[in-house]
Length: 203
Ligand SMILES: Cc1cc2nc3c(=O)[nH]c(=O)nc-3n(C[C@H](O)[C@H](O)[C@H](O)COP(=O)(O)O)c2cc1C
Image (cartoon, rainbow, N blue to C red; front, top):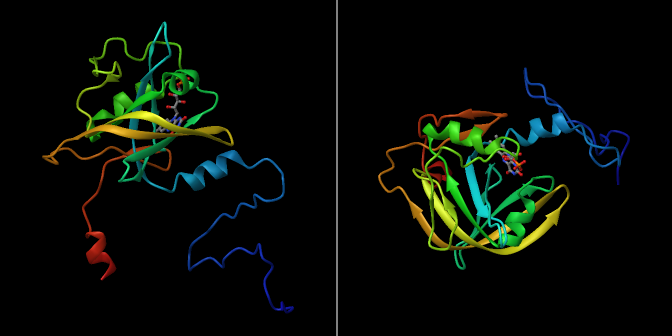
């Protein structure tokens, strides 16, 4: 039973000393404040990938987009996911082509990320080195990790489609010589110092 002293369900958490939190109410049917929501989502630091694929026959044009929505899903069977904006010029190619390759970018590949984040039209593969996988996927060199996937499931969710892929081949740099490229708060970052392993941090 609620009492007069109970705060309303939507009350903001009292800010900690010297800290200001912004609260977004998203349940009233009004369109969300996109910028503020983007800022909230952007507090979550991610790596950066370039996902490549090929359109359906007959053109089978190579396509690619920068994506930070990548996540591993399952070890057995090996599944990964990423989500693609429904407005992307590559949507039909990824959905109809049925295959994609995820390149996990290293710290020196911010330029490649910017190239593949540019709006479609220009050929993003012009004047950069790439080669074809045995199955015909466009592969970019020097990724920290590479996952060649068959499209397993596509789930439309809001303004994106979630593409789940069955990993048929995975490759990664074993030497750990290069750091990953990070993305947080709308900008690229390099990793800082390592802290502790999850096991030790939990202890
Ligand atoms: C760091 C970063 C991450 C991005 N992540 C995604 C993503 O996960 N999904 C997506 O659809 N677009 C993402 N984008 C935007 C797309 O890369 C961009 O809209 C797309 O490449 C535009 O080309 P297109 O018109 O051919 O789709 C991201 C952009 C940047 C810079």
